[in-house]
Length: 115
Image (tube, rainbow, N blue to C red; front, side, top):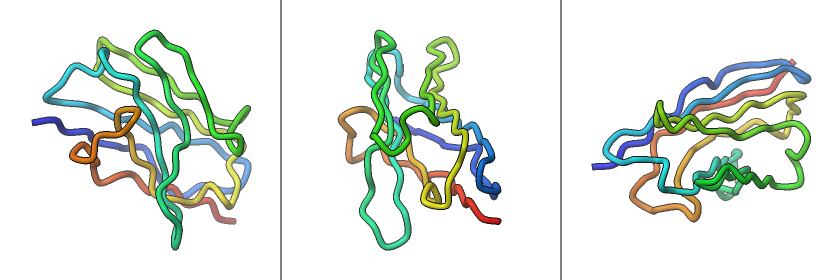
């Protein structure tokens, strides 16, 4: 059974930084392209960033230059380094494969950007 557990969220001021982690069990993440997604209040879940098994990355335009996705296959973990956070980055952040697997969604980790 695949389980993805996100962590690292919290309350941060605008301009601040956070690093999110996604630890996997029940599967070897190295064979997948992995993605981070987020869902803001009242909105649908959206794609944020992805990293292929070969390390190629891609981002939604709104986070380019501010967020960095990475992976550590030895730790079976994917990261999202977020910098220069904005109010509009407030959301619950999830990791999943890319494209996502419907049964792999975890609980997510909440990021709140507030002054």
